[in-house]
Length: 302
Image (cartoon, rainbow, N blue to C red; front, side, top):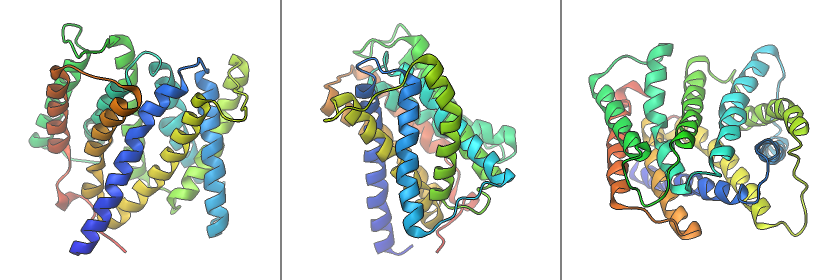
């Protein structure tokens, strides 16, 4: 990459981190009035599908529904939205937004462990040390004896860590089996439609349907904002991997965590004790060590 390319892609990376980091505080606001989690996931998928359908229509991108494509959509829908977001919307009622951002930084560490199990990667001592250091940071967050300046329910912190496990599996699945030659907008549209087919019966059965009202109340504004930001940033992530490489793009993890804590402070006035920054430092070290070396990942492509 040229110096101009690095500057441009770095700017994109910062915008991605700021956007993804904002979704945790917005999620916290969205659950503040008692909306059911199935209803929140339903509308997130509706908004994502609508936006992706518009983009695919403008770009004249067909969305196939062959058996291999449907299998891809189902895995992406379940592990990228339905399962993790059903859990995260419930956990967000009990956890501070900044803690949610911090816990999501374990995704690269979980991804490494899953990659070893799936045969996507080879063992490396450096990355194992990174995994251990990152998990020490997690223990500093969930240990009842550690004062972070905010009440941290251990049960819900562990539940939220499961969402990171789903995201880590999703990335490894795509790395191993590919996307059937489809672009990010097609994959996200197909997976959103399949996700809607899965979540709608649960939403109806649980009575979680959310009636939109106008003007939108704050909680519904937050849901719309988080849904749109998530789908756009995710598509940008896939785009950037193909142009700047996986190693460069993986650095967004640092920015998501940092911006998540910043947005939680600005939007929700969350404040933390000094021990949280020790946990943050440990997790950043873990993320750095667990990243693959450049020689083992893709480089920029046209």
